[in-house]
Length: 249
Ligand SMILES: [Zn+2]
Image 1 (cartoon, rainbow, N blue to C red):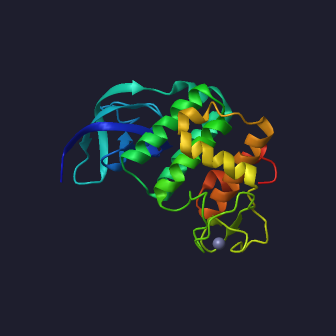
Image 2: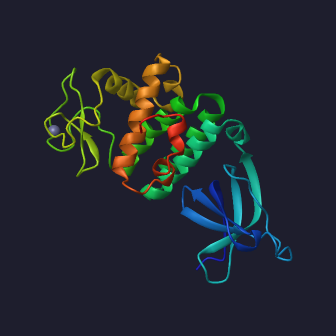
């Protein structure tokens, strides 16, 4: 068992523990999720803190034989501090973290996609950034993300096809494989936009023309899709906090 570890990581979740300690969850391209304890009350134990969403080179030391680490040093690359300026971007970032943690998909591509999404949140709207993240991230889970053919029957979607959803598979499907009586549909123009986002990549996607109304509909579609794809697992979607912005979720 390694005692020390040093490498690139980003703080994706911060939780309170007893005695004003905090547990920080780091996402590392090599190590996946790493649990770090920041001691609050017991100041005799010297450990550095890193704010939520900071990316950097972390030097970590393992606590005894446990799976927990403390931070010995951090060379910060970005703090992403502008995310906390609006409630929407804070909520979006928390949702991205939750999806990464829940999906248990890690590795360099997940890491890059997550960091890029936080970068976008600092400069663009939460809904546009979130759509770019969902479109790039979901295929990495090996799960959702084929917008050209139905993952259940394998049929290619026609240009004007309205997608349905398979509750058993947890994925968007062609209208024939729809098991939800069109309760979660994706119209063709929305699907074409999603395909375009996938083709051009996350940054370029910010330049694609789309009305605020259409963007909001697609954002809302993804939130409902995620709720169905990870049933009961995404607490921020279950808790209703998103209903402030997204009525009728
Ligand atoms: Zn099908």
